[in-house]
Image 1 (cartoon, rainbow, N blue to C red):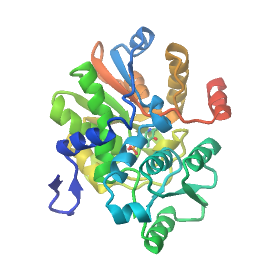
Image 2: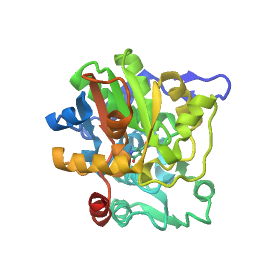
Image 3: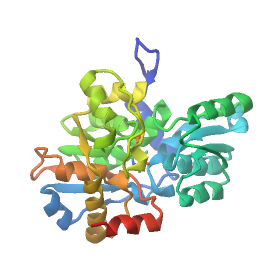
Image 4: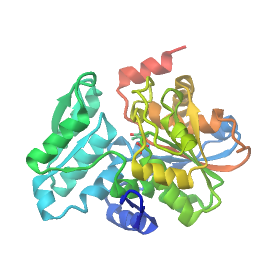
Length: 328
Ligand SMILES: *Cc1c(COP(=O)(O)O)cnc(C)c1O
């Protein structure tokens, strides 16, 4: 790990990604990389889809969560972990905790998707609800952490979480060889920051594009301003990308390794959800369509290029999914 002098935060590096891959072997699925001639034609490039919607818990977040929990010492394991998340990080933590025998508490909003709450419960997680409008979830989580000695694992700004998420990009590049560009959704930047570690080590010429909702484009603003920009909670159907700011670690990684962050509109996400369903028979949640939308609509110079698109998750309640597909 390398230390950033100014902040004393510790950035993960390639060796941390290698360690994470070893920890995740036999735990995280090596998800398939799928192709579709119809998608290639639609995007105008050769597209390799890394399908983390088929990962355990239905999203890549299991990787970071497991990698973080697997490093706990005996005392931490006994006391347990706490996380705040409306969805996929909560699920990843719940399953990782169940596998490792570590008690996990997740702080979720009252209006979280029912299927996610149920799935976290089935893994034995203890759930604490909060009100999105009136409560401060980070404060609630901190209090739980202090009162019960629980180790807080944040959803993105944590070296072990970032290194775990990086294994997605590593598997993709190892499987298909050098790519001209990689596209990934960006919320708090854990997945994207991890991708920069991998391209720097394995594919230095590969461009790295992040994709975020146009209504919540704090990542793009931050890279332009050269500092972490905070925004109000964005209105978007991409509920996994409602982070309001990057973290110290993810910002440093993105600044160093991301080519550009592409703004995406909700209507583009819906168009991509339909394409995934029709062309590839894949159920993909709105947030996980950001990468494809950026490749299809971003106006970037990728014609005929070999590009990787990370399909980050597939967790969406069916009524909501059907409603979005039917919108005209
Ligand atoms: C969390 C999440 C993202 C964003 O990941 P970050 O590491 O926060 O940038 C994208 N897609 C899905 C499905 C997610 O759950």
